[in-house]
Image (cartoon, rainbow, N blue to C red; front, side, top):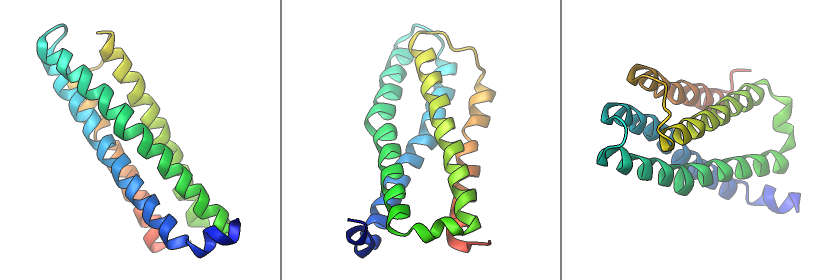
Length: 148
């Protein structure tokens, strides 16, 4: 089985990248929706619309894309376990774990908005919106440059 995945490594890598792009698109967009949600206030029509948008974005795009990113990434490692001997992969995996934690934090914030219990400011969500970008930069630099 491992040989099969090794022989189809470029297919796995392609699907991994596609899933990652979808995941990152959602991770960039969700905190933007939160910024708009804070501005909308509680209980209004816009707030209710944003709740639907946030829920659908998370459940239909972000969650499946994250799962597929992890699945294809782990299959890539299984197909080529020698990658684990390189330092850059450990930095990448640590950064992906941080991104996964951020994903969980955003899911928790979505539930708070759903219950009209948000306690954070527009500024908080604007800053949170930048974190996926920083993590993405680190991940891409590690994969492309393989500095160590």
